[in-house]
Structures are given as C-alpha cells and as structure tokens.
Amino acid sequence: MKDTQISTLSKKTYTYTILDAINVDIEVTDNPYQLPLEELFTMAARINKKRSFLFVSKVLGKHLPIHPQRGLLTAALLTARYAENKGLDVKVTEGLINTFVQKETQFQSAAFIPNSVNPVVIGFAETATALGHAFFDCFEEAEFFHTTREEISSLTPSITFEEEHSHATSHRCYIPLDMINNEREIILVDDEMTTGKTAINIIQSIHAQFPRKEYSVVSILDWRSEENKQQFAQLEKTLGITINIVSLISGKVQVEAKGKLQEIVQPNTHPRIKSSIEEVSLSAIFDKACTSINNKTPLIKETGRFGTNSYDNQVLHKKINAAAALLRQYRTGDNTLCLGTGEFMYLPMKLAAEMGSNVFYQSSTRSPIYIQDIEGYGARHGIGFPNPEDQDVAHFVYNIPPGEYDELFVFFERKVQAENLQPLLKQVEKLQIKSIKIAFFSN
Image 1 (tube, helix red, strand yellow):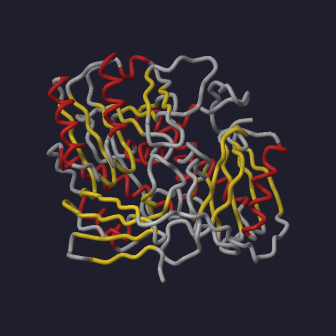
Image 2 (tube, helix red, strand yellow):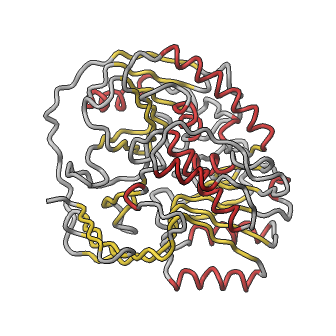
C-alpha cells in the first residue's frame, strides 16, 4: 500500500495520507495556470513538534533532485504571476506554462520585467535562496538579498526576524542601509505560505525601521486560512500599507493526526563502494566577503547574502559561465548530481544548468524528515551528517537511491577542513557513487 495516498474527491479537493499517521486535506481554490499538483510537490512527515508534515517540492531542488532548469523555470512562472498582478503585459506567460507542462529542460532565464518596475527582492533562507535569486533574475532593474542564519563576526544585521515553525528560527539581513532605506516596493519570495507568519514578521520588522507603502509576498504555494488572511488585512490597516499576494497555487489545508509516527531504521543492503575524491577550486572566479563566527574562511560576495543589483547580476552570470566551463572539464560521469549545501543553492543550481546533459541538482537541508522507502512518499532515502562548515548543525540529503548517480559534485561556499568532510563522505559511500568532486568557491 502506498504510504502517501492521493484520492481526488472532486476536481479541486485532495486527501493525502502520510505514513498512515497524518491526513492532509487540501482544497485548491486558485490554480490560474492549471498546473498539475503532482508536478509541484509530494508529501512527507517532519520530525518537528511545531509542524508534523512537509510539502516536498518537486521544483525547488531541496529535498528531491530536479533538472536545474525546472527550478529556474518555476521562478520565472512566479515572476509572470507577479507581472499579471501588477497589470504588466510581459508576453512570456504562455510559453513558460507550455515549457513547464511539457517538462522541457532547455530553459534559460531572461529578464522580462521592464526597468520601470524597480523593487527590492528578498529570498528567505534557507529553502528560498535560489528561488528568490532566480525570481530576481527576471527583472531588468532590481536589487536582491536573501536572509541568512549565519552570524557574521564583523557586521551588524540591518534587520532580524523570527520564523517560529522552522528548525532554525532566527533570520538576519546583512545589507547596505541604502538598499532598504527607501520607499521602493519590497517583494518577499518563499516556497510556500502555510500561515504567512514569517512574512508578517519580516514586514513588521522592516516597517518599524524603513516604512513604505507597498509589499508583495510571492510563493509557489499559499495555504493560508481565512484567519491567516485576516491577519494580513489587519496588518495592512494598522500600518497603512498594501500587501499584494502572488502564488501559483492557493487553497486551504486541514491536518488530522491519525496515529503515532515511528521512525523505522531502513537497513542498508547495498554494499558501500570506495569513491574517488577530487577537489575543485573556483576561488579565482569569485570575490571574497567577510567571515562568519563559526568559520574563518571568507564567505563570497556573489550569493546575494550581502545584497546585489541587476548590473552585478549580469557580471555574476559571466562568472557562472566561466565556472561552468571549468567544471565541465572535470565531468567524467554519465549521470551527475550537483549538490548545494544549506543556504548555498542558487550558484550550484545555475552551474548545474550549464554543465551539460544528465545533470541533476539538489541541496542539503537542516530539516529532519521520517524516511520510508515507499512509492510516492516524499523521503524514500536519506543520509545525515554534521554540516562540514558548522559541525554543530546537522544536515540531511534525501531521495538519492544507491547507484542512481555515478558522479557527485558537492558545492561549498568556502573551503572546509578535510576532517570535517569525513562524516559526509562516509555517508555518501552508501550511495554507491564512483566519483566525488568537492568544489570550493572561497579558500
């Protein structure tokens, strides 16, 4: 029996049963592009007392491997929805929908929002750092930064806020004040809104110091209840602002606990293989920034963590072209997986998109999930290890079946000590990947 059962009660109502322990009823109230839900997500059970379930995205490249172009395309679709909301005629929407539905992988993002629209785009760490940056790619003139869980030793964050349900709740924003000390529209980009509390928290935090008239909250999925929506309406009234809501799918979610979740240890019946290990340095291509409290190797400037604009983004894309050309020279596998790490998602996704055919992308995550190898479930395989960049933080990688890939590129923003890599490499032995390349962007 499938552990995730999907029964269509009507054209717009779905019931998901997760591990025979959680029922999730979904009523889709708006699906303007008629996108199939099964192309956007599946579901899994979280090991988290604050929220028991997880929408496992099939387009983000976080918990499931994806074609990297699929992630970039989803961000472009979301930008097209934003354009519609603003009354812009961008003439790309139909082509984007067709590309998505037909599962084409030859997509290249381009700026199609005119420079008359000049917002500040913010991506939420850690899951939406790549989505936010790829959304920003679609603007001719904008600025972008993403929130971070990193503590930077030499900087004071311009804004901080909390994300209550997350595994790591504190967000920091390390950006130049002139990027946010203005009256431009702010666009908050996240993968999903369940309550919208995170968006409310950051709007309140920004508005207390840098007030303005207009905000937009953009997410692939919007599951806010009527009560949650009223909280947004009340915030608009209290602060005298407009909050535009943009999503690809919106609806209502009801969750019912049916039984107790139990973690079942999956026996590893596959023999481990000794992989070849090779290091690749990309540090000559990218610029150093400052260090964080837990790691004295510098972070890089190009991630968006410290803020960037559309001109700098064009320069970045040339650097990505150069880095991808170098990485292609290192490719030896027929089936390659590119693995981003934590918040470091956008550059690995863009590089994966330029590394040739049969290249897939995903990222490690902080989220602990129940693993069961049952068809349709959102976390069929999984490994866990201390984050090589911060040993106090556990990282996980899901849904890589043993023997699926013959080559793995692991992308780290900065070089880490060899001994800190060992727990990760030991876990990767279970995946039967012959060749592993460790790519560093800062030495």
